[in-house]
Length: 415
Image (cartoon, rainbow, N blue to C red):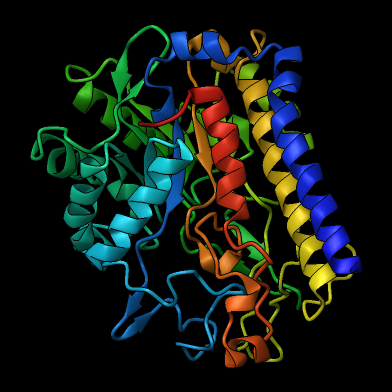
């Protein structure tokens, strides 16, 4: 009875928070109708971080961190689809339906260089997304140490291969409030320190460090190359160092880390605005990453804790699972509220420059536990899966459903 009472009260409370969120946003100056008028393609400004790196024959990514699938996954949650293959058309179709139903209009693909396994998958991925009226953009990963020198070339490759060659049927062109359009690209591990010191006091060079001047030469080259083709190019770096972001020639920041909490975002947005930089903070359910059991005992590896913390969680207890899910749902609502409030604040750079972009972190980064993709309900876990201590909640679809209520409440329902 205690578990059922807690679950019912938690779900009702979170549903009430989501339902009342539009009222709260309105009190903070966010007018959904005005936002739709300003951005007629508003759904395309809500973009899922998307990872097409999973394989099942042989297993890829499900087997990292010393794991042995199919029962022992490199994740704290078992997907509703199981240990799937990202190349499966059936999987891609189901993902597209879920994304479409959520109200989001695009995905941001984790991309690992020209000719990589993921690059070879992009044509079929784009075919499916286009068939569901969804758009695709790219998140440039650190696929090699000196990838900064290839930044402009990589963007040219992506635009020509997946934009021009396809007649722009699937690649995202972000439309600003003034009607100008252009591609948007995000990059991970961009503004880095030259050295780092580990827990043993050893200082080493950061292998993928690049001088700001190197990045600046590349970002300048991107804009020179495409000046006659697009009204603007939006280049975003995953960094909170706004001075170096500006020096490197990026238009602004796009924060990936879910440990950068929403209550700090206004300060970062103000720092960006002081330099006329753009900012994009992600809507997220927190972080619950899998422990890497393959690390040696003397390494400096320390697993990141559950965030948001729900006190001490005993995952064998249903009431604790429900408390953790309720905390995660509150984070979704809090982060949604915060990013919309900041992006529509007339005193900050995004509203002044007519820019609006909400990353949703993530659709399916299962290793870090912040996926919106539906999970198995806990009662659907097999005895072997239960024995391995997965964190699946009572309702495996609660995250995507909560997010869908929030997005469609602002952007309108999808047909």
